Length: 270
Picture 1 (cartoon, one colour):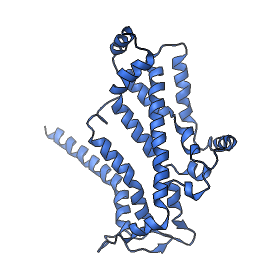
Picture 2 (picture 1 turned 120 degrees about the vertical axis):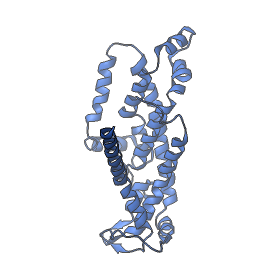
Picture 3 (picture 1 turned 30 degrees about the horizontal axis):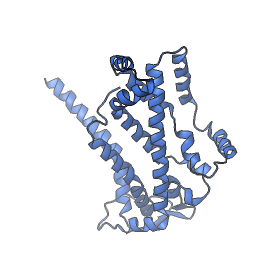
Picture 4 (picture 1 turned 45 degrees about the vertical axis):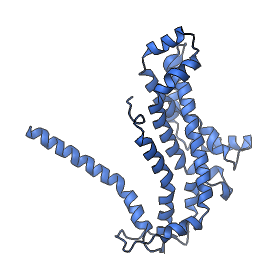
């Protein structure tokens, strides 16, 4: 019993330490955002600001067109998340439930694309977008990412866990494959689809390199690229930048909280 108590204590201590290390950058951002503004190339020392000043949040909102960047990022991240959930369910159903020659080999080749570094495909993707006439346009931020191997893999693994008797019963009642997917599997896969959608939204929301490369018009910037405008060679107003960054994290936190309050989302296991 004593050995078990020591093990439980060490486990809780390790988890607490990991949690504090994960939340420390967020707390550092919040503390820095309410300090007095200062133009410097190095971040000011961490200290407890008193009294806290929230003027940086108002200044950050007016320093850059943050509302427009919000709208651009919400549009891009929402379309990408929805697209990856839809294509993930369709492709996941094909790889999990349909039987055809070469299915497993095709799935392995499909997963192999995850091994290709993103930097390798940056220039070919840029040239392709220019050839399609999508350079400096928002479709270049959404269409290439409507399907992703990770989303397909996660949803395929979840669909594999569902009993085949449900599919057999629906097929005996005359349902097509699309009807089986729509009426049987999608309602059961909503928790997994919610997690995939959240991860896709978060990944697209914080993407920086591709939007920076493909978008040149400032009015079409997403939030990560817009935040970079607050930095210059002359110096960085770190409290102002941290206030803008805190505002940029709000939609993701609200989305996570809304999904977390749902009992079905996150209540699954692969």
